[in-house]
Length: 242
Figure 1: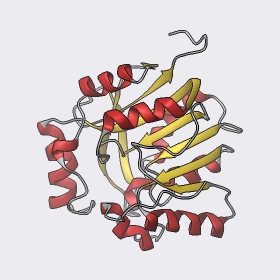
Figure 2 (figure 1 turned 120 degrees about the vertical axis):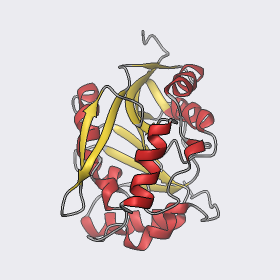
Figure 3 (figure 1 turned 60 degrees about the horizontal axis):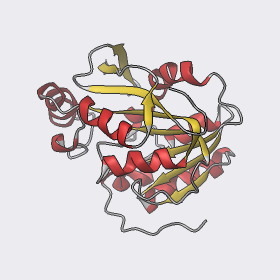
């Protein structure tokens, strides 16, 4: 399928050329994979052979992580520069990943195509999160799983997800997040319900405790969802029960 060409005005596209560098400003994003999927794995069992779509794949951290686990992975992102970087790195490392330029609100895939859709650190960046969740539900198979994380819109999240990382420690590029675009759990539950997705677990927090000397971040999973939170939802239909 041909790429849906869009203007590359996406904030993270500016970091495409250095995405995989050892000193990349995006290196902290790769740190999320282990704590996220240590949680998500409980709902999957085996990744091998699963048809997986990563929405908002950026330069390919999550897609490559899941490809290494044996999944048949596709990735989509609105930035042509990021998709080019992801393709280039996949070729260099011998990974077969189907990358497409496109927006989350209009996924260019057939209905019911994927066993799993991941959307991590993305929903707070899309123009229309409700429509995005609806599109994700559309491309999931009945019984398929939606794995997500996002950021709550609270005073605490303004402090710990914007002011400290972007202005104080500068471990995140300034302008990466807009507090107004953060999503409350109540809003997220409404998006899921409207899309026909049923929560498979309660929402869990993931707190950043600090950064290692090599640039990797340190995390703690917590019941506190006042900053970031993650969870899993399942698509109903065709005999799938809640």
